[in-house]
View 1 (cartoon, rainbow, N blue to C red):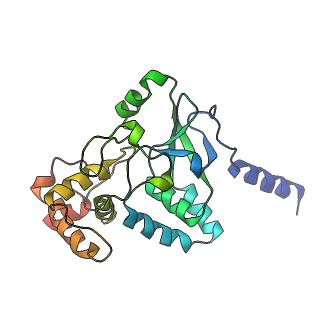
View 2 (view 1 turned 45 degrees about the horizontal axis):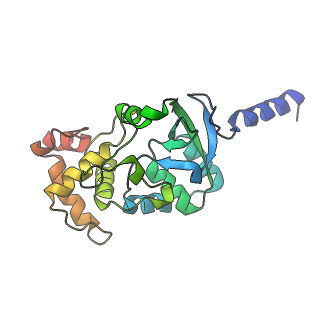
Length: 231
């Protein structure tokens, strides 16, 4: 191998090599953090959706998994105490955790320094969702401390699958949209059980609701599928 080719090879690999995250990591930078250090900013996840994501991840080899994760931004806010708060990609992160992955590539989107007003700033920036599946408020102290401890919100799975099929849109940098839909769907469907056995039936019910005029106040309405059906 020629010297210039060898140098290019070394430089390219150094470019993709990420340093560990630290409380001083620059805002806008990418770094690597252990998953157990990521704190959730939402009180639950859709376990059905996580399990589907994990199945997909398990089918990827190391190289394909690395390439896939490079395209998925995992946004993190650093608190005044130097903690790492996961702003989005909770489902992907828990799927990685279940898959046995120890570290993740994250992007630092902010570092907050006012400890007294930390949660106020988080809410003002829409970086936290302090409501449970039924739309009832929770306190920051009630948030799970680790992604592995996130409880199952079945209607969050339903909302996630609905979004995946194009029945509502999640615009860039708008977090927690699915929770608004999950709570709304649950109320409209009388909180009927959602599980692997009845998911197809529940999803068909949700699709009809998602395209109805009753959903027009929800973020991301109407989705592409609803627009195509209206033509």
